[in-house]
Image 1 (tube, helix red, strand yellow):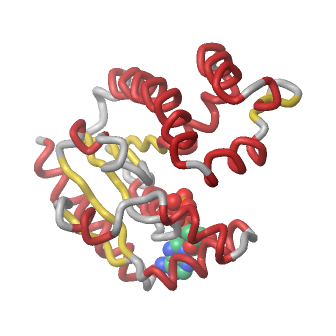
Image 2 (tube, rainbow, N blue to C red):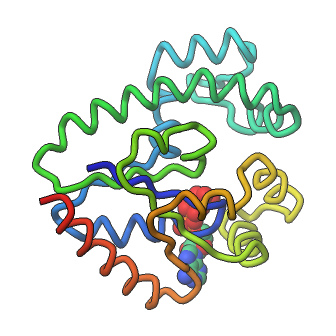
Length: 196
Ligand code: ATP
């Protein structure tokens, strides 16, 4: 069973995924983290990115993140081009991961752009982590040491929260960490039951 875990920037997806990770019968896949790894390790991805964005995309064989970020966050078509290169590779990589997880009851697939990338279609269940916009902006500024405007620009490229919440099976309100834990445990018990 594949459980999509999504939510806006700074909503607390990784925080929630870390709570799910404590259960032995659950496997976790973080699409964003795996995409970042694959951009440095996959020869196919590297050559496609260089073809699209130029040789400056890599420095010392590592993705030149500031260079790419600067290009894609100013130009939506460049972001779409990058996503069109990266997403199919991540999807393949995730499928290989799924094939190796038969012993687990369910897999939590964390993806900030689950709906935007149509990955929701691969999920049996969808959980959206929710926190109000101002809280998310403050958390992200603090975590990434970035400006308000930089965080807001990233948010602009994502769907509005309402649209995600309406298509979710479960919504986790992530304001108070203890209450978040309780919600995760309840959902985990239901999902474990469902998977049997
Ligand atoms: P992104 O989409 O940018 O990867 P995310 O949704 O995965 O973000 P997290 O990285 O889990 O969000 O959380 C963002 C920041 O907010 C982190 O620094 C985290 O420690 C903090 N945070 C998460 N949940 C809470 C909470 N309930 N109370 C206080 N701080 C929190």
